[in-house]
Amino acid sequence: MALLSDLINLNLSDTTKKIIAEYIWIGGSGMDLRSKARTLPGPVDDPTKLPKWNYDGSSTGQAPGEDSEVILCPQAVFKDPFRRGDNILVMCDAYTPGGEPIPTNKRFEASKIFSNPSVVAEEPWYGIEQEYTLLQKEVNWPIGWPVGGFPGPQGPYYCGIGADKAFGRDIVDSHYKACLYAGISVSGINGEVMPGQWEFQVGPVAGIAAGDQLWVARYILERITEIAGAVVSFDPKPIQGDWNGAGAHTNYSTKSMRADGGYQVIKKAIEKMGLRHKEHIAAYGEGNERRLTGKHETADINTFCWGVANRGASIRVGRDTEKEGKGYFEDRRPASNMDPYVVTSMIAQTTILWNP
Image 1 (cartoon, rainbow, N blue to C red):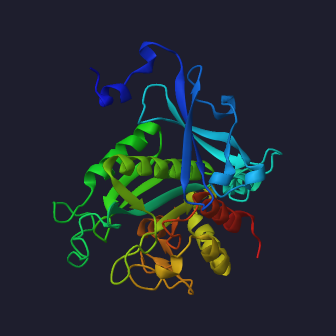
Image 2: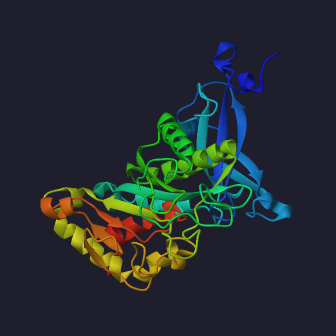
């Protein structure tokens, strides 16, 4: 008798050329990921060769019941680390039957910014540091924390090792390898300052692909925690009190910034970012005011400042960038639940296209 694990791990290529494509999209809250699968006649690696599909938008908070059909348009293809073989994950965005992007489709506007010739010429690169917290499913409390209680104070947990400091490493390592398998440019992982909190980095990735890759990396993480019986939280301040919040620090550079003399370009870009501080904060994630307090390696939400090697600043410039006179800067304001399509395109729009 076959075991359930045997059936899950069946290699379809032994008997058929057909593959399974898991279509992924963002639900009505702007953070809830949804997906469903369909069978295709053979392997596909080009999103333009994939069929459009549809779903019931009234069940995701994205359409009324009397006109509930929403159209899925494939935008990016990744290898499926769960089904493996030629099976794929497909990142989609959503449209009305008439072809208009629905209000929660933030990718559409981002793609217009990234296809602007001035932006294309500058080749914007992003490195996004996604922080998250692993929670015990039954009690909604961080992994490794005593139920209803607290661990020792912060200090030994950041990049820590040992059963009393690193909680959930099996989930984290599984996610790391699954993302690399999928073709996502994950550049590293580490334990964060608050116990039960971790970080993975996606990048450097150019343009709209940064958003595609981060969303699919989030999807893979949600699927792995589902298997492990845990819950992942992207709340920017999951535990109140003297505990670090969770951000999505966004590292950014353009072709001009990476070239000789780029440090002057970086300083002009940061100046423009400061002039639009309120607009950026408004787009950088829900509940961010609970995190950006001026404590725990953050700048106050109402104040814009930048500095070299200053993790208490809104924007940090690295020592190497200052020394070499070119490089990148890090926007430390985005919350862990930000939409990467919104944040990456807004940074490009402000620094490249906007003229104060």
